[in-house]
Image 1: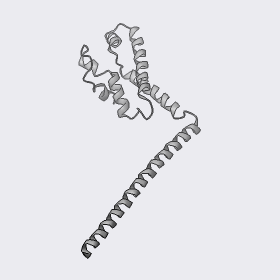
Image 2: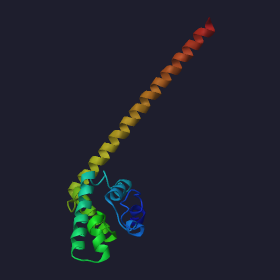
Image 3: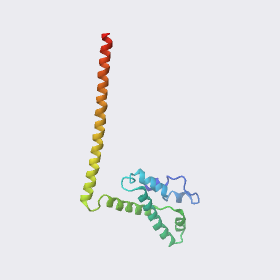
Image 4: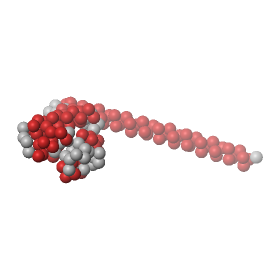
Amino acid sequence: MYKFYAQMDSKKDNTFDIEYLHSMLSLREFLKFGYQQKLTPKLLTPDELVQVFKYVLSDSQDKANESNDKKSIANRSSAMVDYDYFKKAIVRISIIAQEKLGGNNEDLLKSKLEAENKQNQQLEAQKRQAADKFKKKDQKSKAEMDQLRKQFEAE
């Protein structure tokens, strides 16, 4: 999955070789990942997803500053993260989502699930009411058409 998203953005900076670009994940690709995997807006806000990326990017660049090999030099200026830092981002996303879902507090998680179920039930009830209203109008229209047809036939 990482490789799929790492190769999505065709607008990456061309100053790096294509192999390097396809092994790194940009912010744009990371956001696509978040939306397509329904992490945003279900579990994290878009701003939180950006913050997670910035955090792992900063961590990646700090680590790159400690070394002078070719990959580290490229990582300092690329504003992209590799697979290891992508995994760290997934861990951070999991932590944030777990806190939002109640973490170890089962009562909070249970109340959130109940509230979501109640909201879904209300939406279903609204849909049924709208369908019933439509059926009544349709039946009324049919009755009026039958009455008009009988009047026309009587004349």
